[in-house]
Length: 88
Image 1 (cartoon, rainbow, N blue to C red):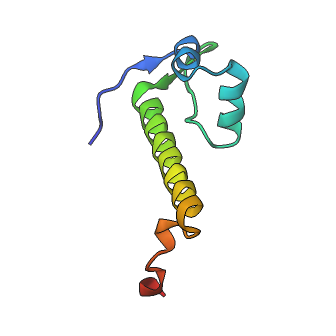
Image 2 (image 1 turned 135 degrees about the horizontal axis):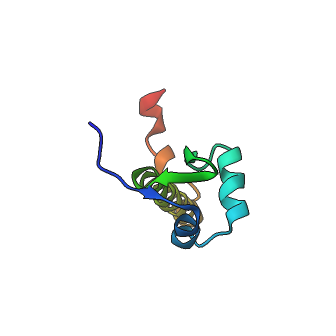
């Protein structure tokens, strides 16, 4: 179902992410960040739940990348490829 969420304006999103406005807009153009929601006039915002979901996905991606790098560095074989024959 729908989660309760609040609107976040650009300064809050920039502060939360620790990146510039231009980076947020570049990520949006690349489809890497949630799109803004027009509120009327020139006002736009993001749903807090969309930003939180995006942060969670990025953390998971970073963790998976680190695990793959660590496994490959130690064994020469990423852990996700061990036992891959079972899926072929």
